[in-house]
Length: 161
Image (cartoon, rainbow, N blue to C red):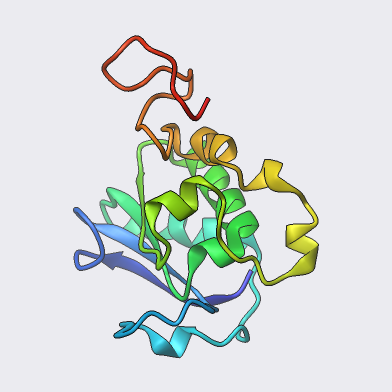
């Protein structure tokens, strides 16, 4: 995955003290983007395991409460993002996740985001679908319900399940 930067500890990028992973690459072109230097799809390629290791090292040094994904556009490297979330969830389940994205929530829920690498897109919708995101985050991106498919706080089926 292409990485722009990793900040080990920040209070400016979400609630509490968080590590911040800045992805490199974005084709959205939001007016007034705060991080235009992250738009080009070139830069250091790093492995997901290396980023997980860096976050876990930061967690040893700082009392982290979570991780924020920013960029560039994290969802334009959705497969790497999902693998990163899964690795961090497995090794540090107490940490919360947050993400800054140029996509609207309804676009994310419907899987309407652009993945520039054909080899990633060829993996299929199963890797980046709302159901896969629900498994990674533990909550449905559409209704906020638990992975079980029950709408949060109510006993009715989730429309995204």
